Image 1 (cartoon, rainbow, N blue to C red):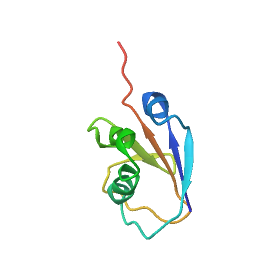
Image 2 (tube, helix red, strand yellow):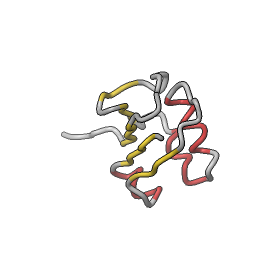
Image 3 (cartoon, helix red, strand yellow):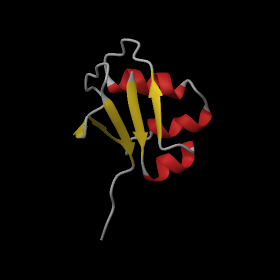
Image 4 (tube, helix red, strand yellow):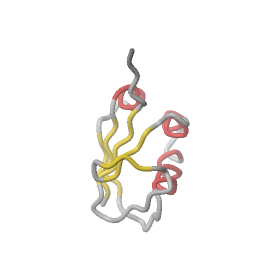
Length: 81
């Protein structure tokens, strides 16, 4: 099982703060993202280049390997001035 959390505008567009997904042997964050995007059009927000991802509270790239029991978080980039 994977716990997936969403923050900021991503949470608003998906209308959920978290979901649990069965771990099906996905190897990378990109693999999981592809599986989520298959759920429908609103999930396309995850394809945006500026979406950040963390695995077990550590910022990582989309090529990061994931394992059963991991927690992933997707969030928009932080902006400031």
